[in-house]
Length: 318
Image (cartoon, rainbow, N blue to C red; front, side, top):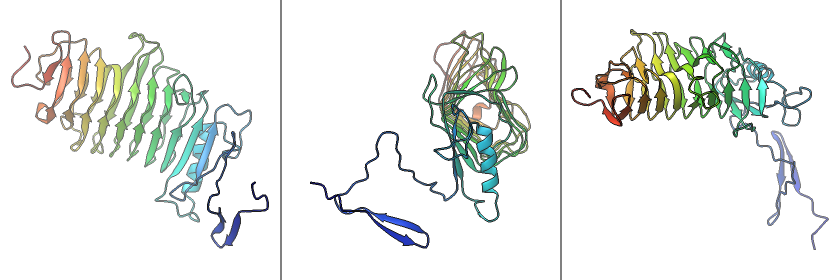
């Protein structure tokens, strides 16, 4: 029989209590319960539940009702002199299915992580997000973004250095301009994202999947492992941009026009699968791919006049 007289030992220490479970013991968590682990950096965790009837204090048992509330709280705590968290990272966990919310403020040095479920296994934020001020070290992970109006789905001003968008899903409205517009921000990582069509119809696609803009600080940008369907896949807008050390690699891009339009001629273009409605001659300056062929290797192109052709090749495809 179980020893009902046994109680776990709890030691009071200056840094907090320590509970000791004897050999052979266990911690049993019943349905609905949880064991909470703290943020490994020692900074704060905040929780958002898009379905709560009233907002709370941001804890797991009393979550915020909106992401904006969590961002405000995170920016306050990460910047407090008393905390000295300047080199740590907060985390925001977003639960729920779909919510209408236009985000305008970024959380400094923070991860926003989707852990709810909508039609797909992540929460979906319905709106257009124009971030008016820069923040560094922001990461979006496993989130769905659904454009609710014309214009850009997500736009970032200059100096959002270290921005990472990882394994997110981006869905256009009826007429949407750009899925991602990122201006003059270095060390950006766009990895594993899905930029898709509206309701399975090529009539509803983004004008540009990913637009890298500005010319002063776009170096060390990595666009890798994404699945993009749009009019233009990836565009690097400025011809004089200093973008050496940047890569477009291992993407699948389905475009009605240019799959890659790198006006800087600085991006490495490596191992991409590129499909376009336009015609290609393999020159690196046609209607399907416009890039520096001296920095390109291992790509395949299917166009209106070629099927699964290597790009680049010696000479032309014609």
